Image (cartoon, rainbow, N blue to C red):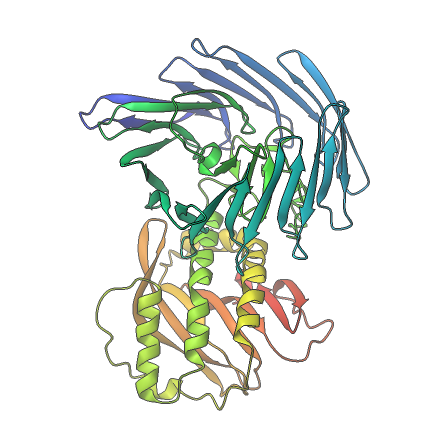
Length: 523
């Protein structure tokens, strides 16, 4: 087989080339060599399990760099040699790192890092009842962190200075769109497309330029000139930087916390110095892919080709699984409003309002026309009083886990259906509550709303009804290709052990609710 190559280029407003990343690919698609416009060259080596074992950087500007890694059978890094300096690592039976050279670690019963330190420097970590990091204490002072009901970080205080984050929960992954002081004075504003495009602060804007992994490699100013540059090792340690712009969005385009020397990846914090998360993963992993069962490993020990924006599970940068995962997470972030709106449906008139709500929530355009299914869709008979705040909080934690659990199977199923059957995607589905017995069928009601999947817009439909005898469903999401496929279902009825069906990937209980994750082939 010949050498596979992929090239990414950036140009300024005059058409001049300012960045180039030429990737040499292994037959599996993994990046084995990266050559840049500046003359910087990176060579990556892997073992038979495709874990990164070596990185050699030749950089005529910032200096050369070399790293090698060895692992135990489950993927824990046992030795590293960085520019000739070797470090050994030890772990307990839960794969918690306990020793890194002369640094020791301690954990609580939930697998959260409580202490990290040596004789010269110690750091203490504290967490909420939801296992969210709330405070870090070290010789440098105390840092505090706060989160909203959706577990998004909304404020941090470092060195006595508070920064509030205004978060857009409608992105595929929650994104900060502005930063403010504790008196609510806006200091930074961010503009997004599919990725972060620019930040504006102090009356000037800077624009982000990414490499193939999605890491910020340079910023340009309003004139189109490069103002800042960033250089990383494979795991995200900043090796060099040029420029003084106050920018926290760096490795894989994610938010860097200088006070922690960690990256905030939503569900958890990532420490690039050890290539691991500081907290245990709550996602169960995939039994057929053993390395995903590891509770701390970042990017399955292959950070050259994988990212983890959710803090739950690794995704490759170009896969059907990632596209499905991203789209369904985006839908989930917007659907809580619709669950509440459905509770107000009392007539055909308010049902039309519900359709309008779908259009509004998903950013659709166009008028809401009549649907011949609207009347027959109103077959629900009384929704009991439910605590919708509890529903939404439970959903915000569990639905992303369900999407991560199913995305690998769904990605394979999507690709097979697409390639074998030449079947086109018709749209995405939101299943509304069904708290009384099903009537014998379901109806997908069209809406003008659309969501993005693989850079194309597809319609959103809301589904009512189910097979005879089915009841107790609060919410579901799915895909129509070519038939309706319900991928996830959130239920509210008496929990029965062994309720998991043969066609399900996962099934679990959470409070008063439980979740079903269906295989693609079941539908």
